[in-house]
Length: 234
Length: 369
Image (cartoon, rainbow over all chains, first blue to last red; front, side, top):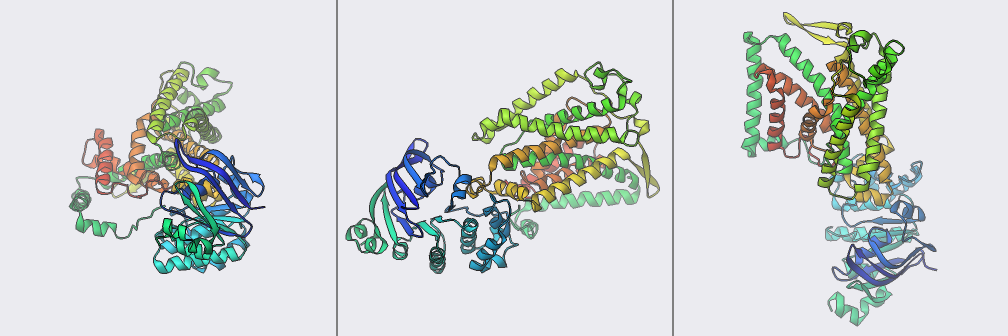
């Protein structure tokens, strides 16, 4: 059984329907990428899973339970966490405070977990007293991921983690995501950098105009003639 | 709290912005003129000290009252015009408690509760911090609790159902709440301005300055000390507790706060509790210091509080404190040059001048606790 199962999802914002019958699965410890042209509704899938859109139909099952009606503060207790694309750190809070907020729902700060995250991203330990707003783009992404990892989620949703980063940082960031996945956290990623994401992931979905267009292993999608013509540019 | 670097803005602004340079020059000229007047004896040092002290006292009250306003602005993103009448409501509730404690059994209850025809009960009761310290402490606590409870109650009835609406809708609703609250207070307490302390009982101390001296009284000192203590308390709460960090996080980025699992309604509840409580404290202390209660106690100073909060950078509690103190001191010191009727004018001129050169206020952030 899959960890996350999105079934026949219709969702959008107010009167505007963005997703039309989207199906998506993420298995335990799997690395799944959503690619597709701008406006395809990739981010909307993630927001919907986290209860931030207006769901008009379908089901979102996480770990066997329908989470459609749950608030984010309940969803994160089920083992799901989310890094939005932009403004994903509290700029006025220090690095450490940002990480502490990641564990807000716990009664006590999990200091061991905090240490693990500092070990994963040593730059965050170095800058722990610094305001997040003063970090570079790449460091902010690390902090945002660190915050989302504080509860040791089973599945991490990452919305365009490489957006706005310099090319060498893009690789570094995607490498870090590989490690997070290698350590046992399933990853669902929306990535503008489609070829790179498909190269790294286990499976991928191509979303076009709010609908599933293709679904296969990353490698198969990369070599699929139709996908290349539709979307990857030959 | 503050994202922009504070270090160089003045230096670089002076070079690039003649407006800033102009205001700085004017400020320096006023300061030099003050020194000149002191040197030539046109203004006595003890007079300046008196203005400065009353400015600090008033500024601390404004700063304390401004914290709640800044908090609701940063967390809920609207300017709460009901804040002034919350001050009044807190002060009336607290002072009637003080009266009941002091005068119980000797004076009719409706007079003690301030609902009867106002008598000169303050001289009968002889209240001051030294003659009735316990009654004043209890009254102060009642003010804090009443205003905090009232703030939460108003949120439940009016503001919570409107949570997703625009700041303008909330602002207009808050004006309605202010008017409703004021007329309710007037209905209960009748138009009256009861004295709350018995002036001769208030301990005073003359502080020598130069050849003269200026007087500080125990109630002014009480206001300054308690306000300072509460400000330090709010600072510690915001910087060093989980709740405080969550409040700053929510002010910083509400959407992210929700995703992170911060219970935003809980943060809002504490915002009203703490902001409302401080507001009640400010109202009680202000009446203690000025010696009488007034049905428009809060409304009259609401715009001055707004001036302080805006001056400091709306949404920043540190800005509210600094802005309040600046407004208080400037308005009182302006008496050196202007007739005393112009103190409020001076305060607002300073506010406008600062906003012209630094539109986001001294502490910059639009929504930063």
